[in-house]
Image: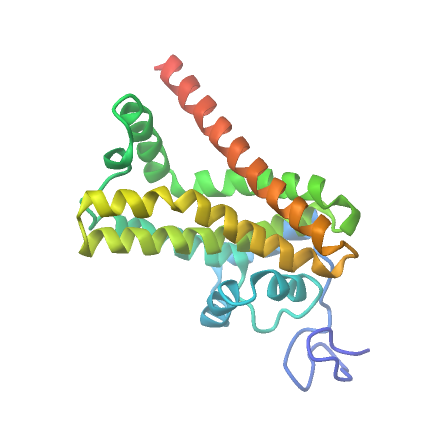
Length: 245
């Protein structure tokens, strides 16, 4: 057989050229839960800096290559997410600026509750939203023939890129505390997230037969749908929490 990563002829369990396993498989839900997730939580792989670089230079193309078999250089998506969440949480402890500082007077209570929830359960909050991201992209790009699990994987890497952007903003608030300027930067964050999602999807699905116009429109509406649904779910959960209390 030929190695899926470097296309060299491979015999045995590993490619003699690049070292990737020859048993590379298509992503399926059972394997993702029993292997990729468990491996991501309890092991560290090589490729951290490479994966970070790829997420900000060619995110969609790189992750498509990863899902299609070129996995030797990439960092496991679950390990990556947990590391970024952990580092972001630690960094956030040094910032004196809070989300409520950017909210209007009538929404400060809601934003404070949101920040409390995401700070208390950061890993749970992110890991619960990714399956929703996967469903939305699965519906918008269903003709790409990527299965739902593959959509979950690609959205895991997309979420990692978004969390890194959020972490950079948090680091900025440590060294720069002028709220008037930070509010302007923060007001552009939603636009930045939508733009990153569009860029990611546009690149990833560019090899699945979509015209550039269709791809742009689907990427745009998928990004907007994700933003609206996430905001709606967050509002609903916090209202339920408030009602129970």
